[in-house]
Every structure is written in structure tokens, then in C-alpha cells.
Amino acid sequence: MEFNVSQIDEVKILAMLADRLDAGNAEEFKSVIAPHLGQGGKVVLDISKLVFVDSSGLGAILSCLRKLTQARGDLKLCGMSKQVRLLFELVRMHRIVDVYNTSAEAVAAFED
Image 1: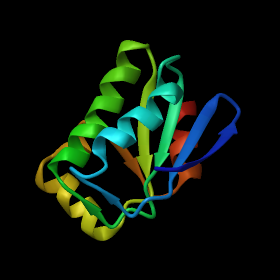
Image 2: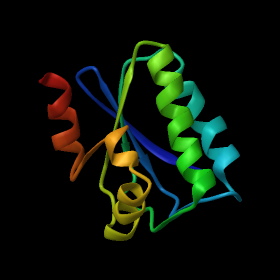
Image 3: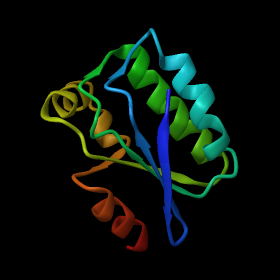
Image 4: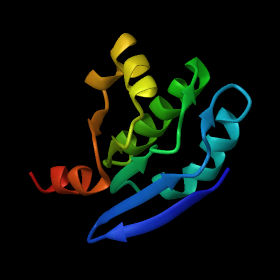
């Protein structure tokens, strides 16, 4: 699993390159993203390429949020497809993780 990593001021942006996050790659996702979360800080996870997520994928994202929260950081998501957003709303994850349309909006939300 690969990510494009960039930074704007104090905010790290991780753009996921995979189109699926499911039982087949959730553990790989967590192990690859873990080094970016351990120090805490402000992180935006860009999932605009993602077209499918299952319960394992949702759990992996929650695991990232938990890890960041423990390190006194924060996670915001951006770029959700309509299909993925519907799933997030169905399981009410949009109430747990802040979701934005673009990475610029997510980065700006950290300034509020």
C-alpha cells in the first residue's frame, strides 16, 4: 500500500493511492500508515482514490484516529467518493471523524 506524503505548515497530508480498503489490505494499511501517526500532530488522510471500504477498512481508519488521539494529534479525512460517504453516514462514522471535500478545506479546518 502506498501513500503520497506532503506537508502544509504543521499538517501532514497522506494521499492514499489504493482504490480499496478492506479485509485484504487493512493490516497493511495500518502498518504503512503507523509511522506517520506515532508522533501525533495534525494529519489529513486523502481517500479520493478509494472506491470501496468494508468493515475492516472502517476499523483501520478508526485505529488511525485512536492512535493519533493517544498521541495528542488529530485526523481529518477528505476526498470521499459518494459511495464511501454513504457508508460513513450509514454507520455514523462521519460523526466521529471530520470529513471535508478537499485537502485544502481539511488543512484550513485545523486553523479554526
